[in-house]
Amino acid sequence: MANIFRTLSLVFAAGCVGAVANSLIVWLFGDLGINAALGVKIAPKLTPAWLYPRVVWGGLWGSLFLLPLLRRSVLIRGLLFSLAPSLVMLFVVFPVKANKGMLGLALGNMTPVLVLFFNAVWGVTAALWLRLSR
Image (cartoon, rainbow, N blue to C red; front, side):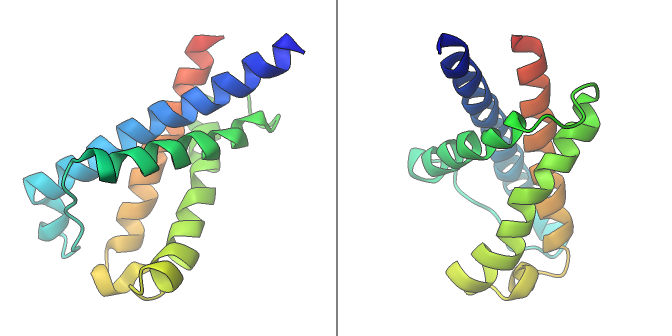
């Protein structure tokens, strides 16, 4: 039983660490004007109110790492699992919750590319953290 709790806490922590990395890169790209230069209107303020839910959701998304897939490749595993939150962001959050159109295109045409990139940062960071923690 203790091993189950250990595994659950590790995948949650890995997802949280990935979410911090993801959030910092989203904020940094916005702060440096990279998103704007790409025509994307994403420039969040780095505040606890913005960061906290992202970290919690990242931890929950970390449960994907319970799946016994591609355990040998940190990069491929992280990239594969990053597709799930990307798809939810592009096809649920942006169009339904945020009213930013399908794929978030109301924020700019490069939004889907940035979402895939930012979530890849989450996935690879989480996979690497998980690998190093075992």
